[in-house]
Length: 181
Image 1 (cartoon, helix red, strand yellow):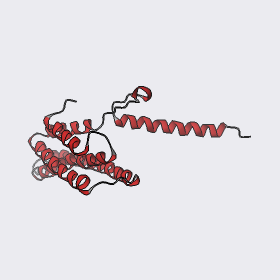
Image 2: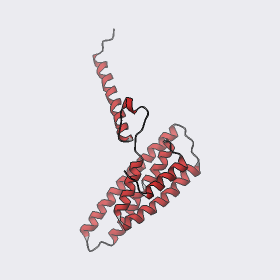
Image 3: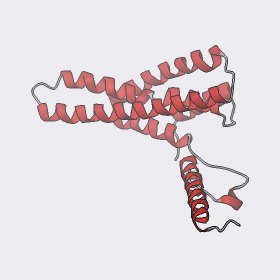
Image 4: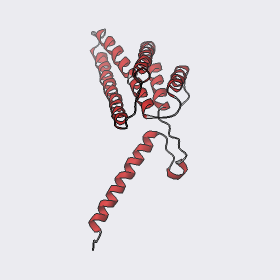
């Protein structure tokens, strides 16, 4: 995707504060920020619903968007909780200011930008979120020629999970047919 100025500003901020490298702690920060547009959209929608008494059909459509946004927020929250669990398990130490306070400040600013864009023109807020989500997922590896080229990390992880399932099923098949002497 061709990113806009706001997306580039967000990416530059993240790279300056957390480096260009991908690591669990940086992914956690990204997940704190990733849920923000959905919260902003939900908030704007609730405001709109309160002004839609004479148009119940329109209010219902807005409420459907609220439910979608809430589900997306929850999905982003699960990502954060899973990454928290992984960093805890690995014993990764993170400073309070850099990994707790600063992400909340970035999220605060991003929330208000998303909110304002959604009020002015929802399309702009959706596009900013699409840029943010797109930027988070490219897959690059020196092993790509050997293992495979994937459009995103999501595609890579699906392939890895599929590979593991195939390995398990092949092993179970061999258990059933193997002759032990």
